[in-house]
Image (cartoon, rainbow, N blue to C red; front, side, top):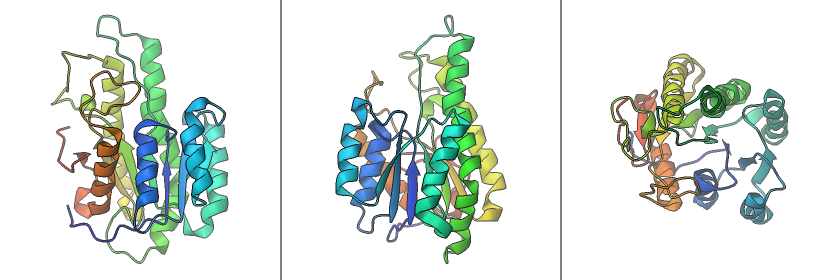
Length: 258
């Protein structure tokens, strides 16, 4: 991993960013010494109570744009894409962070097709569809960048995964089997690997990141805070280079076994 220089990102979109890790990442980008010209935060419902904090942030930061987005609905993705295009124009989108996710805690005995379909739709197919839709804007960003090699300052897709999806680690199995969640994140890891083989020709970096066991509203087994995780992730993003393309890293930049 290359040594961090001044981290400069023209534009970043973070899905699922009205709370938790996504909101934490939005805050960290706004706090950068050289913040992005555009930060796009997304929420399933612009009217729900959870959007209060990010709306307040948008009122203070003219570079923060809040969008309605459901990553499982192509029409919703296309509508968000049009709004992003209006802002970034020919400069493109520098950084796409596929953070929106969902999980269930069913054990192997009680796992079912309905939950499995739901989690694959959000955790795996959602990032695929987002990456496909925003690929033209990522390509534009890469083409206009004077930077050599691959980096998050040029153009990148960052998929927020989980060590629960690691086939080798199988983190906290005794506490939470969460079978459908693990399978969906393992599939997301493979998607990231596929992207890392296809997109470098277009100047786009692809990496998946385990954010740690974060103290969010859905996690009963927290080990770190949202602030610790999001600060760590942004630091890792600032240091990613070509040699990190297609890797699985945690919030401290350490490799996670597949």
